[in-house]
Amino acid sequence: MGTLDRLLHDHVGFRCSSVDRIGIRGYIPGLQYEGGVVKFLLNRGNFIPSPAALNRNHQRLAAQLDVVAETTGVPVVRFKAGQCKEDIARPYQDGASAAGRFGLVLVAKAQERTSSWRGYVDDTHAGHRPGHPHIAWRRQSSVPDHWYLYFADAEWGPAFLRLCSYAPYPLWACANGHEWAKRQLAKAGIGFDSLDNGLRSVDDPATAHRICARLGAGHLRDLLRRMMAVMPDPLILDDRRAGFEWSFSIAQLEVSDTAVFDQPRRARAWFEAAIGDHLDLGRPDRVSLVVNRRLTNKGKHKTPGRFATEVITGMSPPSCRSTTSRPRPRPT
Image (tube, rainbow, N blue to C red; front, side):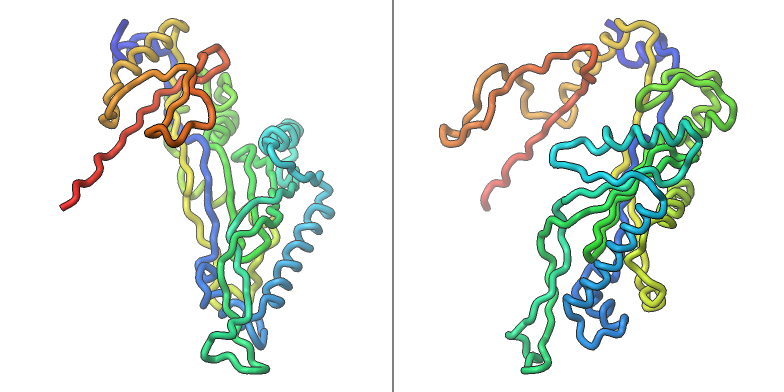
């Protein structure tokens, strides 16, 4: 068995590092605290910052989302519990890309848990008096509809936005760096063999490396701009004049290192060497194999199921994992 470095150096025909899945969280900073919600509602001309005023914005947003689906003529589906959303949406996205139709291709709804603002009359507040109720606001768990807007983008391929129509209007956007790289290679006229989520080979590997390294924040901003131009916005012009605006942060970023070996047995050798070389990754307390038995915690709590070995087949992606436990501090 060779070492990891030797196997990668001598038996890899193609290797490429690239950004994979990207998750972007969108939020409105001014709506993340109670005083901001009050300002938001008063700025819209409401005499008191009541829940009814916030509900009107929800109804406006939901109505505009329905209009988007009707005017674009795209299919509308409702996701059921347990369904894989990507498996349902991907055929619409791939079909539109193959036909050269870019933009919104599917609208979907799903009930999902979130934390949203709820207003209530606070009788205990010092400013409360008959005829002049004091409205307090609190974040509470709820399960409202979330809207999914699926796109086939000319630069990024499959991408989507998820928006909740209840304040503070959390937004989630997702795209894939591999899909972006494939489209840049195609535009440059460079042939390649594609994997489900990556590249198997490229006619010009050096150019592929440069393209993958070029992906940056500007490309993500352009994608967000195109998708949000279609999405109904919870904010209106008066809100922006009052300082309310969207902010974005990368909440999920996956980076892959694809290595294509010249023979399948080399990949097996690499996997075995990786396991041996990384047994002490993170300084684990112990390494053990648990097969077909239950575990108990001092005889009090039993595991809900049984532990067993995982059978690695041609369809199972191998993985290396390591866990570490920290020593408990001693009392002083």
